[in-house]
Length: 72
Image (cartoon, rainbow, N blue to C red; front, side, top):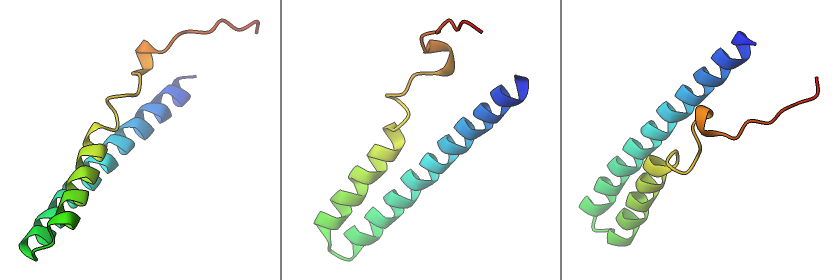
């Protein structure tokens, strides 16, 4: 069972790193779009960065999830 827990922790960490990378990339693209005079595109990239940065705030932490009892 410890392998499953370790794997889920690794997957969660990888997801967090990927979301951070996507947020950073979206901010860079927003800056490039703004520099090119494309304000609407810059706005959309900023919204994408915000979405990536806050994607984890809505999900429950592993210890916060309700526990289910099983018969086996």
